[in-house]
Amino acid sequence: MINKILSIVAIILTFSSFSQINFQNLSIEEAKEKATAENKKIFIDVFTTWCGPCKVIDRDVFKAKEIGDRMNPDYISIKIDAENHPDNLKVRAYGIPGYPTMLIIDGNGIELQRIIGSMPIDQFHRELDKQVPSDKLPQNIALKEMDEHPNDEAIWRKSMFILMNKAETKFLDNCQTFVHLFGLSELTNELDSMIFFNSVLPLDNPIAKRILADETYMPWNQLMYKKLDFRERARTAPTKKEYDAVHDEAKKLYDQLYLDYSGDLEDESSFMNEIFPDDLNPVHLLKKKKVKKAKKKK
Image (cartoon, rainbow, N blue to C red; front, side, top):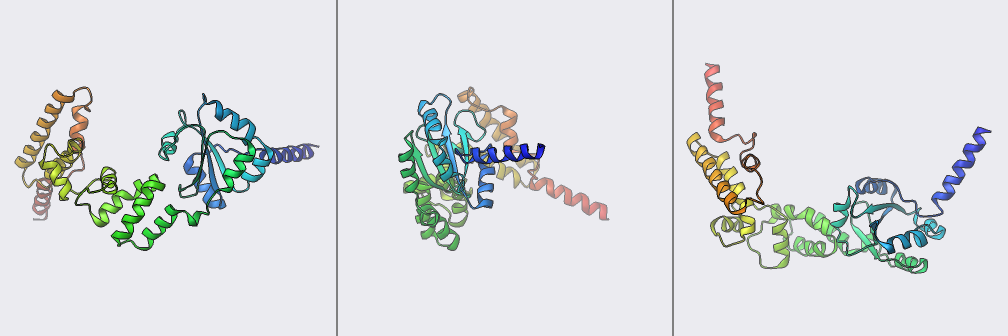
């Protein structure tokens, strides 16, 4: 008897999961892993609790049997409350213009399609029908080109421009790699500027040098590069005297910043620890260690 009851419950659960969209309690990363393993796409309903159209589409479309029958075999579906979910910042990175916004992404996080606003069932079907095959999407073609031509700056520039407009998260993921591969000596267009603002240039880069030398050039970026400059100078200081001089210079900068921006500035210990972390290993200290080891051997 118990076995029969369990069988009936299992049948009911199976039927109910396919009578509407089966939204699963997964994070975006978990959904990506599951989608990759099951060769499925990911459907993300981005909503808010106060959004009326969100409630309407959830009631009239997502709970419809014909939509569940269409979606569940091919999609891992999750819901993200844009104001109260651990992944709300991750989903906002896709650029959410309003609610509801429904994102369809692949297992790599590439956006395949977005559907915006509430609508009846027949229109929702038509929106799904518009989907372009994953391998035909410009952003996926761009990523493939970058992977196949890792040393071709022209191809990377063209591909990065496509990612900047079509797949922002993948663009951000590759900014630092672009700088590492090809450098960035000037900011002459939107692409260069976006790569610059989402990467950290080496201190010997022409742009970084100008930021450090010219108080009027990109003042909003100066503090980060000044911190990097202090840290590098401290790391390579050949003597304790020179190391202490860098430390004093950094302290004076903090004191001045505190006078200018006391309301927005981090506390002094955090500021100084960022420049002089415990694992800095300045050259003059490494020299002392070598001397001590040499004496022990004698």
